[in-house]
Image (cartoon, rainbow, N blue to C red; front, side, top):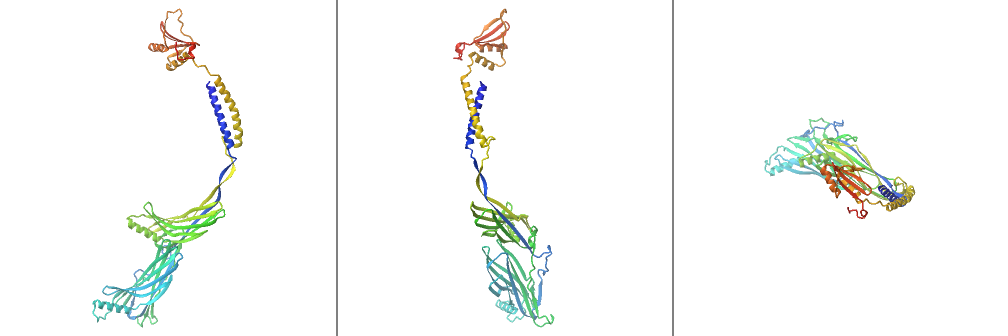
Length: 543
């Protein structure tokens, strides 16, 4: 019976699966969509730089200069005229427009009694990025001014005819304005020169040149100022007869030299780092309305403590392949770290310095629009004395516009292709269905006869009292023996008796009769269950 039921379930399952296979095979499309790149494109970026260094012994480019604090001594009695010259150069590392410079020369007199007065000597306006001029220096006028002030202050007598001893500081002030990289530049350059006037002597400070490097965002520039002077001499015995002038020529700036990328740079001798970012956009399909917006910034970071961003190139619109140039001033960033260390009371041995170029590219194609951001970075480490860049000048990023196209359907179901499934599953369904119907009819037509009451009772007793009830073919023969037979009314009573006597229950099964007995010496306890016609209809009735 269980075999027929199991077979029926398996056949019905096979039939159902075959029906599903038929449905799947005939609904499976002949072609399916497959993703495909319709447009392929690529961003390419390069960050190059060149470091310019000032003359130094390290690289064998030093120049001989006068020691700081050196002074030249002259004698006023043999000086007829003094002519002072001033030269100025504004050196920018990027194009600058509408450049204008105004200059003013003033002398600050510190009198014998300690008072100070500012005296204008020269001024001019609307000059260019480089200019030079000269002006006379009249010591007699300063003597007269000092005498007047001293008398007004009633510090000395009006009839005083001694030589004045005073200090004279000549200061050049240059105001610069201009426009570059979309921003306005305004700055003032100040250079001073000191002269000590004694009783018949003139001591002139020989520090006559000054160079200042400054940065404003990504715009770096340099002021260079140079004083010079010429002394017209009277006839004297101190100098040779053919020497009638003493000339202090303006200082000639030594040329800067360059270092190849990849070196360790020492910030104290760096003049400037000139860098550029180049960008290319390549596409394998025609494009229209290609526009790019580029921004270059420097990120100075003390890891997990602070970070500061400086704009080197503000957002600028470009089209097609392009290059932008900008300057990086390592000394500026080194000074900024010192400032931050003083402000927050802590600092690091090194800081991270990153130059980052960001390009936002948009374009139109016949297959869709391109709208992407490409980022390229040059990472470095800035310490108190050095700057080191990682050697990653180039990077690229690929992209695509995706679409779909139809291809033959190669999907398989339980290892079968679409055509194979359309043959196999209908055949399987046609074979399994009649077999399942046949087994169903057999199971319905040949329903098994239910067990009788005494058979149910025997199964229940054996299950409940396993090991106590023993099946035997024949019971012990009582004929001719002095055996007393005690009949019990129920099987439960017999089992209770067997448990009390510690004896087994012997069970003999016959077609319409089940006999149970327990042998205890000459006594036989017995229970007999017989089948009655009413047992099949009312299985719960017991005789």
